[in-house]
Length: 211
Image (cartoon, rainbow, N blue to C red; front, side):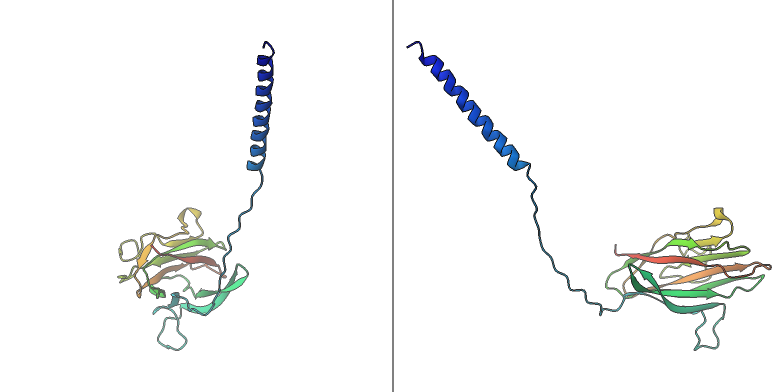
């Protein structure tokens, strides 16, 4: 009779060993690498026309209109992004030496999408020194009228500014909401010094966000 407790203790130790082994086995499975895949497909149809477009404004030179001001030439080109050629409109400014020119509508941003768009001019880059040259690019509202400037509330109050003085430069405008089927003008202020020479360049991006 005195040997039974010893045997019972030995069996409890065996059970404990079995449980410990089981826990170790579960831990090994939980730490294994699992790959879950969920598959998708896409049809990339390139047949739809763009719904946000830029067109020549009343103040730019249209070759078919002999009455247009010849200070702004508006042409279509391309730029390569993501290894594809995207449309890029180009404006050539024929600065009048010694003069300041203010234009209400060099080009127009049209929203032909089905919803309103919040539009801004961003990522301005001045690629040259702009010595004796100053350019302001004003984003109009749908009710824009008159010449762009700080006192005209129908234009966004923060134009792009390209200038030789870094403190005067600004490379992002505010935001203007364009309703579906509406448009806004983009005006410019161009000052060309009496001693200005050569060609200076700048780029920016029209950015649109559906609110």
